[in-house]
Length: 395
Image 1 (cartoon, rainbow, N blue to C red):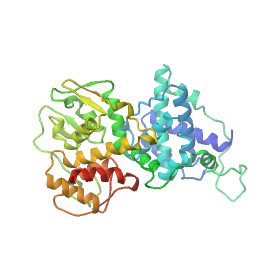
Image 2 (image 1 turned 135 degrees about the vertical axis):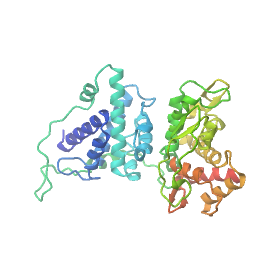
Image 3 (image 1 turned 45 degrees about the horizontal axis):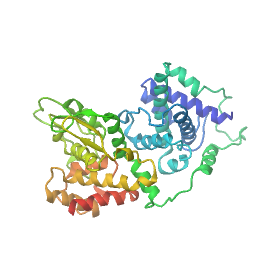
Image 4 (image 1 turned 90 degrees about the vertical axis):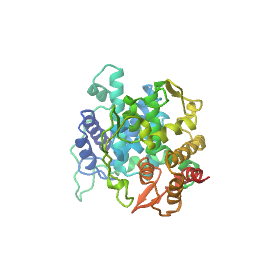
């Protein structure tokens, strides 16, 4: 085995062990020592680590019955990595994570892809260890054994004993990547952009929470004890309580879009209806036929079999889902004029005091829009879906 690859495997082992031991700061510190594309001082590059992680995930998903996905809990993953863990999880289920390494590394920083890969590696190893009644360390040693390597190569002017460049593995992967329509408004780019949003990660997490069926209140809403878990699927911190506190904290960014988004305090509510952004998500899943709700439970709906959105042919269904959510987010329990003003703001930047700032922040939070200095932009691949939802607001 070439020495650079051996060092890459050993570094991935270190990071996954830290994650398993719940030493996230240590894992993050290790990731930050990696240069983007050049191996240095005995450490691989972040790109090299990404390739080995993706290659391993492809093999483990196929050979260990994980084609239906891992048990990764997205809210335990740093927010900066969630979109990529979602994409890699979906790709690995199809055995296509390694083939997509080139495009992933083009769209995201190398350390982001490496971190997402490491989180999934740690999760898969933990899952397999539980299935096999083995320890994490035993499973790690079996599937990703420690490699013997020579002394680290230092950065000096002497010729390297190994002519292979740090990005050789990436070049090899690039040769295997399918050539697809890479234009920003092409169907593949649009599909990929939607699948990688925090919104789509939330949909997947919601289905994990729901399972084959989950009890609801008599009015078809999440039970009080479930509010926290359901809200977390779209990054809302909330908790169901018997009696709502007298006052609720707010943050400045919920009133001023020129301020970078700040983490909101936990919302304590007696009913999910008190959180319109959450109810918009709940109703969107019903409106699009992904779930069905009756007086006792919520369960997969008639269109649930097409929920995965793992094939480009499902682009239309994915864009319809996004459009429905955008419309519901702006209109649910909102003044009609304020909803229209918010849609106009997101469409062409038309400023108005009536703009529903918290609703805009929610769309930003789930990755469907971006804000720069208070001005909204819609990423080009997401524009058809998001603008379709905005058009529905004013129709």
